[in-house]
Image (tube, rainbow, N blue to C red; front, side, top):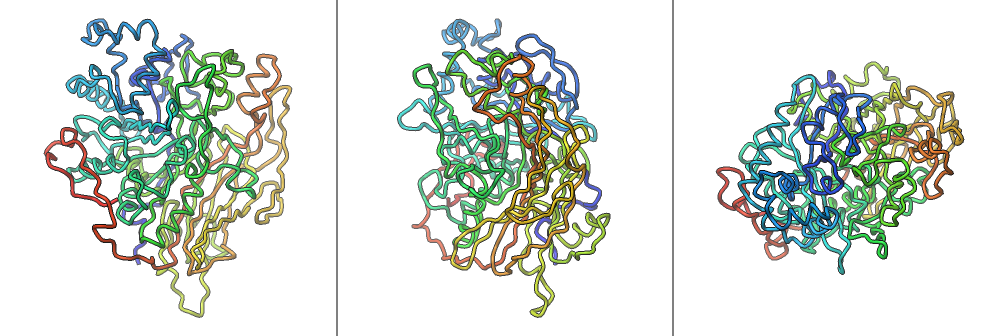
Length: 633
């Protein structure tokens, strides 16, 4: 039987190799980055990713330690490039009152611009369609200039920045998505949050593009800042999620960003008390008009994190026939300096231009408004398994979810799942056997694949290989995180330690510490503990063929100093008490799903669903002048 994941597979999957890069980066062409006095352009961003030095907003030269394999510059579509036009002497926008106000108080204007995205009230002078199209063409042209198939991939993309007001203002929930195209066949204009701030409308626009041969996907990020909206079990219109909604979301959003500089969206400690490693890079400060009198608002936990969403997806699938939360994992930086990363704890130079340009600003801000800067992380990274480093190959791998996220390091992680692996299978055969008789990370195992007859109890096995970053810390452990739904419709989760370094005994849900070599006085550590490689041929000891489930792998490094510790030591200052002095960097594989039940689906009628209005026809792709087919949420 052909497995589901192979529908998008290429001719020779075992030859796939891993590529590292970033799918979320901002330059001075984003209106907020310009307000932070960032000057780096998309062209400079690609040069930086290739290993060339560029200037920080402060004038300090910056150079990435290890070049990337790929990069997508994803500037905000809302007001894309408009701030540079306000500052450009020969631009018609330079003569406007708004330009004069920006020159005298850019921060105040930035707050107005961001608030306008939440209120869906764009500044008319910044919505010039001809100028917008010219700027978008420049974005595409620069990406094409630096795209070098086989050596470096410059993917074309942008950020759809939907900010939903929290009543009363000034704070907002983030429903942000990065939109990535397969090639350079792109629409004349991006679809912005001013076109609609509802994800369903974005997906509808994307479906219309795809019908015209313009393949595209969206990547949600910062669920932890969505105030419970990113993974809600209601749609944007307040309706219960239907099969049609789930299929639309799954089709357009095959992956989610699980970590970036503003924290991780995988799990909050309050949602998994038995998970000893859940409290990692947590950040809940919502976007808003922050002031000395009104510092911050913490976002809601429920509906904002991924692991509970994965479990909710199993329940929704059982009830409706489709899972809206079936997606793979990537990491990105969301840096606003035009510089991808910086990824490494010992090379952190901030992310907000002149607002956090020095260690003193980052660690000990004089303003309450900036007190969250020390909570920022260095940013995550995307790892993609593909045959070659080209736009098409990388995009197809994203679409089939053969990807994983890291918190910055470049560890190698590979996972296969299946029912036809044996306990004595030699490791050198895992890749070939995994593709031939199972699925890689991101794949789905249908119940029909079990085979073997009624007398042979099924064995679900995962083949897992992990190798340390050659320039990073040793590995601590491999964990399998399983979620499943029982016959009563209740969901559960369990964490298995499937491989522990230094020959420690492996037991489910029990934490045996690897130790900690970090010297907090010098911010140094040693690789005297841990292993450089971990493997596991793991059988689920509680597999039930009737219960649908998901499995993903979490790989942990040994403890290392956090950037806040390193920079405090460099300054000769005491360590901050509100952030951990050490962290355990990690990677998360995309899940493997098992479908063990038939959905309990009732036929939906027209009265049970709600019509999603068609997107504005002036922003549909060429030839798509009519409304897209009527979907049902």
